Length: 305
Length: 305
Image (tube, rainbow over all chains, first blue to last red; front, side):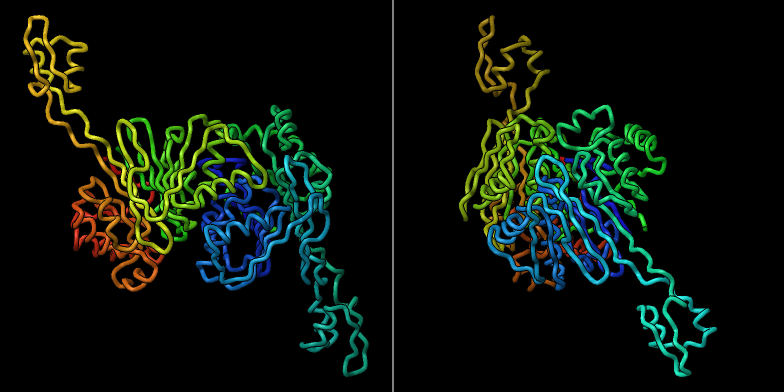
């Protein structure tokens, strides 16, 4: 699973930081979390295969998180995309997409576009396939905001091919059945249990996306034991009151949450534009005082989990 | 007068070309023509003083020409701008700005924002100050489209200071009155006519912005004897039929129009994404076969007139 952080600035862009958007790619499909203005440019710079994008998840309706949607949808249409696309977000996202598609007059996209609006305070599964699910939980910001967690379902345990050779199990469907957890009977009458050859199921990988929010339990639940937590950290501790007022997090708060939730990797993003190349080091110090391995996101940073 | 071309791609951006937007700066004020997605990023890269921006003129309501408006307006608001801002464009632009300002709920900008919608087919003055006027004329595209021409009013003729010294005209208001065209009487009774010291009024500088359009008379009127014509040139001649169908221009057509209108400088822009770094040379050749001084715009190109 590859996570590419496309934009890391809060509210307005800077020379080095575009607005919020993060791409998650796995096994030939990809998911976009937020879509600030400029996302279609950043997807290009990241070398992303846009054709694989099937789902866009928007956290909340502040412009820096979704003003890139009209341009991206329009470009996907112009590029003759055919695969269906789903947009998931808080109440209102459907009305926005609908307005754009009908202004100034209806333009038809060559692909099916559906919107799913999450009721305010929604907590639960928003997407489920054979291989993964995405759950959402409410965050605590100035207007209804949803965080998301993408988690793969447990993958089959590893198959001990050397042992299978020793036991003389033929190549072919028998091995597949063992991997799927079935007991098999060989031609010579021997019964082979999957536990003889297949290790315990391996946990799926997981990613949590929590922005914008002040410290809240919804974010903590999404971040619980996650492989990678991307959490907003708009301010340093000196602005904790401003963070509280505007319902943002300080980087220390975000790091404390990541530690409390047992997130394996913590990446901070969504920095106030006051943090230029020099000042950002203060944030780094504050995060690392809590979590020595804390990472501060930069645009187009890619992390594999 | 300084013209900075912020984006030169048609429909979708490329690695090297952002979407349509052009900034005109003169005497402490500036004007933005079109505002495709990413314009606020490009203004930053161009080092533009956004506080000076007083008027945004939109040609038509295809997304690549105005999807940058929500983000730019929002950022101007967040930066505590106080100066009024006017948006001028075809019918519908007001409804778009109104929707954005009220979605998902009303957000108030710290500056006065007004929209002026031009009726379809409008031809005439859209803005006039002591120093300049902007006129608009209809272009010929798939939906109502307006071209624009910014022209300074004639400036006072040059003042012959050496001759004034010879004649013993004191420094101070007498010289100002001569420059403004008044006859003065000196203390010694001599009568001085302005024509003795002030040359003929100098013509103002002018800039025409014509995109998207197929070859049309509205564009020709806007381009008449202009100092700089920025005209779309989406395709090369091999795609003249496609240009006709989609109501775009080939670069040869645009150059022919520039020559016929007597434009002093012709700059082509709004290139189809098929013209990469290599292919664009074909367009250059086609333009220069008509006008040897034709210029093909690149992003962030600046031209002083």
